[in-house]
Image (cartoon, rainbow, N blue to C red; front, side):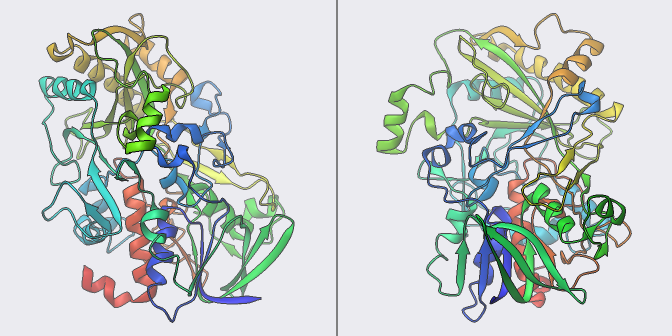
Length: 530
């Protein structure tokens, strides 16, 4: 059995960071295990093609159980099964969240994670090509830039300003309430995913071993210590030992799955599915959070067509030869944050502006050019679960989001629909506003909108909090990401978030990876950075 100092499970956003940072020490041998393969496909590298990865071998293809508050619908949760994980599949939006998120973490069982304390980790990660100052960094591994938006997007931003939004340059700065063009992880017209950014420069290190096609069965515990990992490569099963630590970075679904298969989780459930209990840890697989997401669509009128002709071969040819043109769009080209209730401490709704028709994960088409406004409820109350159905890694867990289980969430979504329609009614939109496609003008009353939302709402591809940081009585790991009841085992991914952030979860996940690496290699460094 090969022995490494540290084993990292999952080469997604956080796992790529952890493996790259720890292997900077030439005396530390690091093994990085990834279930998927390479991320060099055109659908990965061309920014606008991200949804073409869904329902392919690059997608874990998770589905929820029938959602009781959504008329029994099961929702598809695409998750990246490739180097870079979801950073190779997402819409590349770089949104850190709100100061209130992190200050709440620090006050609720995660000391050391306040906004001021995590900011240095965000800036250290960044190589920002457009913004500078105290909120941004340059020279870091991950390239960040402001997207090159379509004229339709600029018009909608103008309409937001007419509707009362502050026009911002930087949604990752001092203020989040307002509207701005999206900051994206792109470089030279291509997606800049975590594997490219962090592992690309590290691959040649002799002390970093990367194994793909590695399906992790479980973490092996001996005397309360995480000592090894059991992995299958096709029909071949191998074990790898860890002298120092094992880091779980398998994502909000994969991390609780692996923990539970290892005997770490709610004892009653583990017994029901035939897994010997090693550590009774009720928080593993519970507290799952996700942002509800509702698209609204309008037809375009006038000469501008937005991204309606995105699939035309001429755009592919231009991107292949110049890395320019419509295929460089991340689709969600502008973001607006607002409060559906003025008494709230921070924004609870995010509007995603897309200069094309987007519906059913990009699978549904519309015969005429259109634009979309997506409403992401970024302060949800609902809590779901991720629970394995058997000890086998080939059987996916049962996932329940329990989406929209609180009346306040429906009220917020209804308010969001009204606000989106208010934006589209502004004078700036007169030259491009066509007929409303979804929900349609017949869906007007609060009751009708609420029913429509329950029938059509999706999620924002942001599962989190399923192995949350917190106190021993309600957390799966402590503020240094150490799993309770086990020595030498940490969590570094979105599952460790105490509560979901107000915005897209990729940037916070990178930050979590940075902090985890520092906790392992030099705890004093964390104190120094803070």
